Length: 193
Length: 107
Image (cartoon, rainbow over all chains, first blue to last red):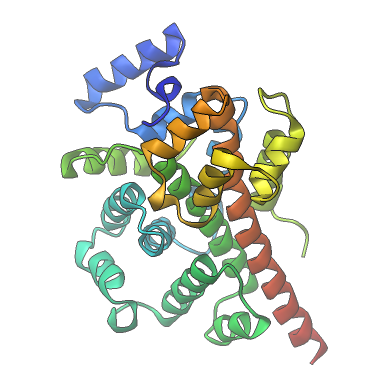
């Protein structure tokens, strides 16, 4: 990463934990995981809690839907690390790689539910333009998405606009496909806490 | 609608990075969060984190460090910039939703 402190500025206990993760998973600790261990009282502890709540907390959206939202927002931001990580996690959550690939290639023609499609379109517009009108939201509501589902989707959008920015600014190392798969397995088993 | 847990947890994150203990002043963190009021290389770096993060380079960090900002200070300010931009998106989305649902209830 672009700051030396994020590569090597960890205490002995955290370094030991990283070594154990590498030993048992067979993969180095992803930079996204390292970041939240750096001075966790400043950012990591609360960031993990927010991301976990958005991605795994109670919601009418499935885990796969929310991982797909993370991948889609990251695609709009061209955030390569997050696209890789959440494409793998959404594909694994749905057990349906073609569904995720179709959405990321061309949302309009992707064979998914209309409620999810209009929600992804709304998140993309917000991420790209920085604003939305009440009419934009009325379109989403008219498609049958509940206000709570919109709130839940906005939380996913906020979490991944943050993580994606940090990934690109700090220069997270892009993992191998096997590394992203291992990360996906972990995120589906343990979540973001 | 009462504030949901996601919003409460998000608020705790924002409050911590803006007002808690840090190696940068609360004023600097607020400026990075708002992408407003910084100057020189720090302004360039923080502006990119907020608006075009894929364009951040090693040179942006090197220039900010050369201007006297430490790595720990950069860590804090980059985090503030990323959380700040995302918080504005979150607020904009929630405001549009509130307007749409309020109008629906009235109509």
